[in-house]
Length: 250
Image (tube, rainbow, N blue to C red):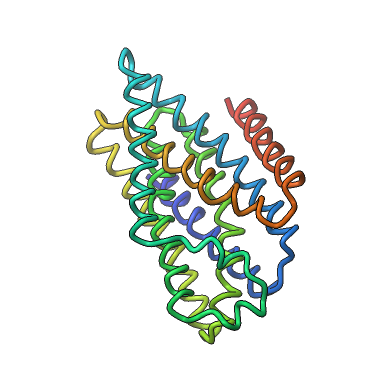
């Protein structure tokens, strides 16, 4: 339980750490942002497959494959529904500082709200990972999500400051998005502890949410500014790093 709580704080704290970096470097180049975000996408992709989807198949027994497929699509459809209700505003992250000055406060708050909402299933994915018998795999998942949260925390600072939100309120809003992740981690953990029968589906559902985020948000964002080649290699580096980490921990 202590390990789960520390992991939850680490996953949520990564967003706050990214926000702190965002305060120090408010004008991040697209090249840097795309490379870092692509690396995080590779890490998350490996974590989703190794830590969630493959264990779902193993835990599901004779129904492992169909149950995992249903779980993956359920997770993806869940986030697709969230996107329809609260658009994630990809374009806002790609705007330059001049465009930020012209961004309305309402759009910025919608942007931050969307990140907070998307952080909930990410946190659940981290918590669900601890439902299995492999703490190393759970830490692998949490590590991948935490790495992704750092650049996400970085990109929310500029738009809020440019919209006229004070530095104090900007930091508190960034902190709130991290707290959502902590709550999600604990929800995911307790859900599979109290209902272990849902573990295979929960693992696949969490994996589906991560795959959706990678494909729908992270990869398009990193390929939108002319740095596709570097972004692709950064993704591969992140993916291979997690493979090596899994081999060493396993």
